[in-house]
Length: 333
Image 1 (tube, one colour):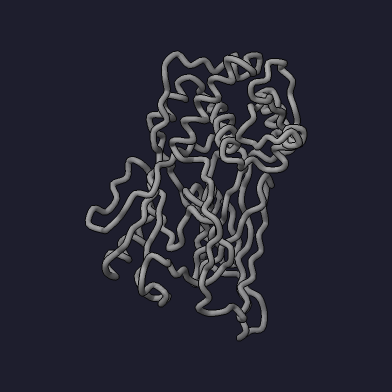
Image 2 (cartoon, helix red, strand yellow):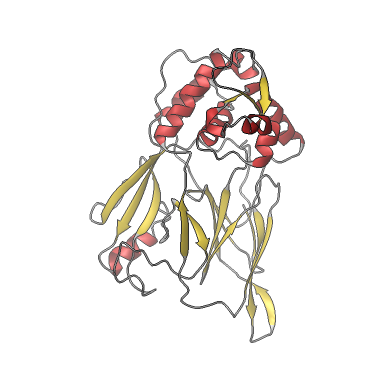
């Protein structure tokens, strides 16, 4: 099972719509109405660069911090009793982040039709400040025309051979833990997505077959980049750095003392409490669902969009679920 942190849902039809999903909801019903007053040709405006927790460098630091925490501050936690690493585990990339620049329409079609690459023409490492119809990259001349060739961005599994003849550059290396959910069967219209399990994942699973440690690892990575959410911060308890009193603090108390998330040490027993509350609330078996609609002025009513592709991207980066809408525009993954 997986905590539901910052998943973004992408709808791909005749137009592209981006919706930020409500997190930690069991069934997130999203109704998106594309009205006929949409401004055609509006440029997408980017905001700040994201502080991404899933870089291999940050995930290695998070893993090292977690191991140290298990042997010191949180040595009485349940995880400390079960997760005992006998050898060094290195965090290596499970995915590479590429930027492609096709030279012609043939290369563009080859890349955009690749179901593994799942490319986006908008940089994935920036927040979107204003939605629009196309992105005008300031580093590339000519793409202000919506039909022109532009950069394409993709988070690619480490074991996938990217097209060798297309101009590309690697922007970053990521490590994503596997989605350890207990889903038994795919929903109607759902498209299977296979995420790779690299050496790091295999090494960790030899120590913890359930994969529960991935929850703790991800929390630490989010904390290091100041990305823990308000509801998580409300439950978790923290130790202060260089404090030998073993006193725990709420985040509000620590913040009043001038500390940021990245400065603190998570009390892992409070993580256990949070996971128990998640399970009791039924929030850990998240199934994104909803309906995509458009207003059809010919019949003067809102109708469902059939066969639109829905992509769920973790942190807006890697596609973890896909589905197509039915004849009424409904989807479920």
